[in-house]
Length: 456
Ligand SMILES: CC1=C(O)/C(=C\N=C(/C)C(=O)O)C(COP(=O)(O)O)=CN1
Image (cartoon, rainbow, N blue to C red; front, top):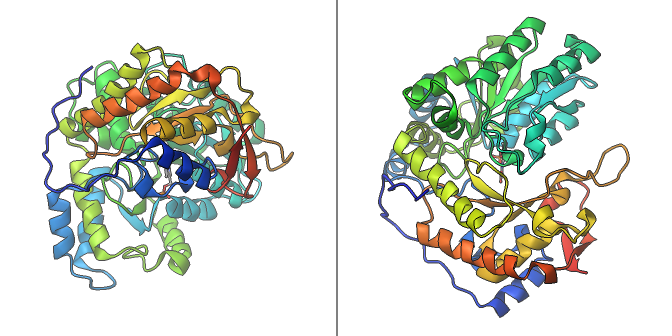
């Protein structure tokens, strides 16, 4: 595939810093071989995350300047709520400062300790908040999602039989809710089909179990439904999106992805009583229900972002940019998660460095080597991110040992993708010489953010 013509042009630029390999070796040592700990000014192309790293549009910036910072139920608040109601189709909307705040509120309000939550694979903060609320996390994603080479078009799908077995085993009243993530991040940004959502929604209705979406990358999921699901090619994205949302009782959203803003999040639900409980809980630490701890300018930036995120030409150019990088790596034989996801290319570090055992942290080492080669910052999504089992204290050994090259929205050009590919091919050429890492500092929670390593 070639990168689709972008339906926008550059209006402002941010100068990038070019570093030498020697500078990068010093920076990576200083960062304990953890790309999260690199100073941003030592990074040339930042593929760490697509969260909060998008370029905003001239309209978003203009709206932000015009937003009056009046407290309580401001014009900005009504603009935000009315836009989310229209685009997503939920009556009750609660802004939060970002996605994990929404997850915290929802988990605390919906989970009774000891109850189960069924998910399609895990996301770090989502599972953290489910477990923090006393929930028991269960993965009911289809088996193909755990196989990087499987070419399933909707690897994010839930396995209805796994879900039904869980409900039968523990009883419907012991399932707090079903949490369905769209464009499953940890599986490689893999979409869920509309057909699967309908099946899961039917199951939840049958047993009276709430269905909650993590709708953080739902717009990109809608694009894959249009592009890959039989009978969907001629439907408009907003139409697909509204039907998709109609199956959920509620959603949590990190606005820092789909909605093209640098900060923000929200909850949206259909039930007034549930909204009131969430509002009361969030009041203590997310700020007033009319701002969720955000400035008014952030609310209007989210409102405008919710309009821009469903433009099919923007979505096509964004998704095809990811496919372009994936194609460049695939052509050279670099093992990647197939098919390419919506927000990132995931390198299969297990197959890239087959001589390294997983507890020598192959993905962590590969992310460091990619930075050394080209100043490109990637993120480890393997054993380090998976953390330790709360019962046994042992590493969780996930099937997927990946390095995520996460492409920010509307930021980098095709030439930047070429530079990243060239650097990765350089590392690939000398992969046999690459050794493992040993962890020299391990924090107790979400260790991937601050752990430190040294080469073996
Ligand atoms: C699917 C999903 C995410 O991907 C997510 C955050 N993701 C980050 C930060 C990422 O780098 O993928 C969050 C948390 O959102 P937050 O980073 O707190 O705004 C929730 N769900």
